[in-house]
Image 1 (cartoon, rainbow, N blue to C red):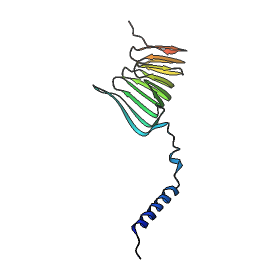
Image 2: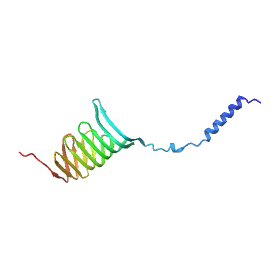
Image 3: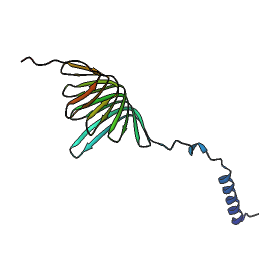
Length: 169
């Protein structure tokens, strides 16, 4: 008894169709959160231009969702002058919204501490609507809110308590 090739071909097509349509597809693959664009741990981000590195951020973990970058345990260094450390940072456009043990240091000796602040990377302005503590050259400044321009080196604040040292003439 010989098996004709037509029967083998028909039988294999039928088996292929049964297997193809009989399989259960895993629906969990299609139910993934499609809003999350990026997830990372222990990462260093570097901002560069034609002259080299402008700034870099060392981040313990974070994610990008809907174009908003959220980072935890961040240390942000702007090469020319500013270092920012915080427990949480949300980076959107040119602003970094900082929260939790915010500390900003400049090479000129300015040190700023607060629980919440917004740092604009382009303009260099720091705005805190929370209580803060700042020091510069031995001068101590505390208050209810602060707006500080890191480039022009001027600040406005309210509810100030300050200890200022002046030169003797």
